[in-house]
Length: 251
Image (cartoon, rainbow, N blue to C red; front, side, top):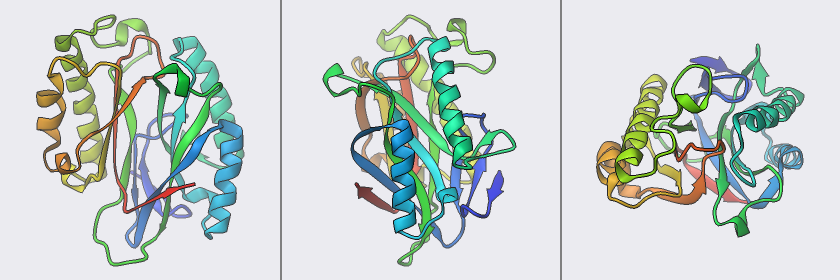
């Protein structure tokens, strides 16, 4: 855990592109804000800065981004996009010692009719002081897909090229284990979650019952928010994120 006092949160180190998870400081909560439409990435950061200024929060309070891309990319294409994204993080002071201080979820919406024409931001999350008594732990976890540790290659994808219910179950179990490790490191549990987001094109076969719903326990009272979509890298089929936030805005 790395504390970012100017943003009023702590984060789990991830990579130069995103951190694994964020938890708000005591006395602060997380606000989730969704744009009415996906805004191209550079313009979105400008819009976020205007919004944060309007509510009296510094840019350092920004701790989560939800990216939408037109279609899944190759590993090379994804790397090229990340270079431009990292440049924006640096421009706005959203990295420390080469580490991103924001979470990120990145998916390609389906059907194609609602996909953006270029990469953009769908939503963002930031810290703000509590405005009412609330002892809920406020946190957010980056989206995770079935990509094993190590150099990102096709061979590092769990059950690559397979989308049968059995393969999807194995992919989901791998992702859930990763998410649960991040929750533990943040000091939270599924009981603290207010929204679980699932990103996949494959929900058939009943694999979600055991692989997802049976594992999230108390969080199931809010259901699971399924976004019909594909993860941002070709041949990755399952992505999931989770958050515990107290307020939501629609801009």
